[in-house]
Length: 252
Image (cartoon, rainbow, N blue to C red; front, top):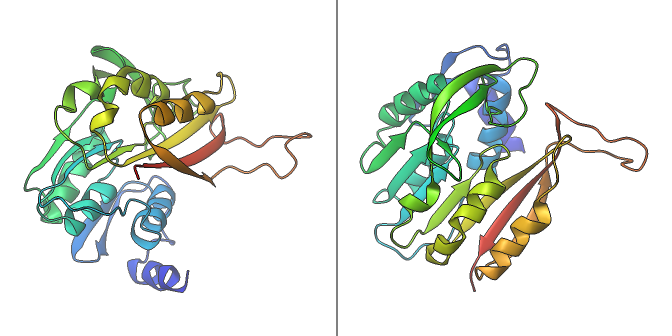
């Protein structure tokens, strides 16, 4: 935590307003930020806690980043594995522009393919609700969201060889994408899934764990974000979400 506080003081981020776009000097490149709160959360998870760090023996690991946002995870992984081939998906057109800008600024563009699209169980076009930060989704629109028509693709069509690391953080679409991709998951060595539970939708957490178990993964889970101290009496929610869980899937 001390290193995080020192880093944030250097980054001079906290004085910014929410949803204010700005550029900050970040490690060894200029990083464009679109929202200070989502940036601080991602910075802590990715660069301080290193939640996407995984053991890798491949000389040229293949990595898929589903829900790349402004590119912090892709940049972290590319700097850790310079020879990696990475596909990064981000549906929000404004955020996608920033993703491409940060990939270029950080000199991590070699063998990195950025694709502007939602990941779903069918291809075509879908309505995407942008919140201007890291919470855009295809689920129920939020009060401050803007609807956009975006391209939809199937993740399974991109898994055509062994995948060293698959990150899925797609704001509620994780269940349908995993169901659609189940016959390709045997090719994945390590998987990270951020599970999102929405108050007006059926919970699918148990089914996600079952999918991982049936495809040969062991898993470790970690609660993040929204907390309800006394859930029998009252349950907190944020942007219609009442639970977030990080799921780390691995093979032994």
